Length: 456
Image 1 (spheres, rainbow, N blue to C red):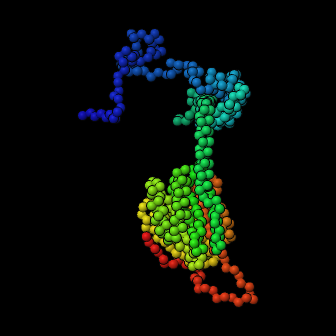
Image 2 (image 1 turned 135 degrees about the vertical axis):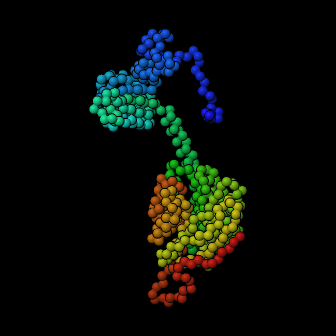
């Protein structure tokens, strides 16, 4: 039994009309009479024809609307240039070298390419090469140029399976002036949109951080490179009653103006919720519900921390954010509690508050994932590198922020937004030797984590 298959929607092959000839007349039948058909035609089989029997090569190249030229020999002498080539670049005397007959090739950077093609026997191409228009007032013209080797038909001295050496080069140019201009306009429009988004995001960030009397703070924001759309990173410092200070950092997933707009709404909401004097985990619960109302398809990570100078504690809650890092006065670097709540916008709301007791001289860092995350590295490697850098980062919070960016390789071409918020407790003031030394309050020798976990 014979089987056949047919793709859905594919038409069946249709037999040629009955008046179509079975084969074209060949050299054996110069008159083309039906009575003198060759044996292949009489048996119903078509004879394979050489294209030279139908068209002349010069006639084919001459009909092409794109400029075409053919060179030969080691000095690339011009052998042929079609009408389209002459209309664009002017007269091209044959027999002269390409450098003499076609000076436009030097402007396009094609002359070195001809040597490579002739020597290697492989085609080479260049894209969007620009030359000035010779006509007065004309705009520059752009071309994609392909150089294809022409091989000899003689195989004398050529090994079996080896191509004969190239004896010439066919130059084919396609004008892409309009395409390049359109791409330039799109690039300029994208750049304007990016600059507008970056301006919007910077306007939503605090223009000047509040500086509490008992806490020094600094922050920095580094937008992504030219090819990266604006992100949703943000930070804030909020003064609360009782001399306390709220430190906030967050990151809205996604890019573009939408992410920046969501970031602005969340930052405004954090400032409002902070005035209610709620524990950090309750603030996270309120932000979670608000994030779902703003955009159910957009999630964000956040850390909300409150420093109380009277108790010397930092109480914080995290919504899927990276852990905060602390550098103790003895140089030890500690990470915050890894037990994070879910990101904002998921509707879970099971966030926890954690409490840390800090010593004078402690430096803390809050940051977004752009500082430590790389596409070709595990994020744990970035966290380890950040901890190592923070251990040696000595100085004011401004100096710490700058050093972290530099050590983590964040430059103007970075592929992601980066926000860093550094805070520092003032170091204890040294007491002169002639004055009595007061008995210090009992405190742990390093930063200590209290086992205080509050759940919604």
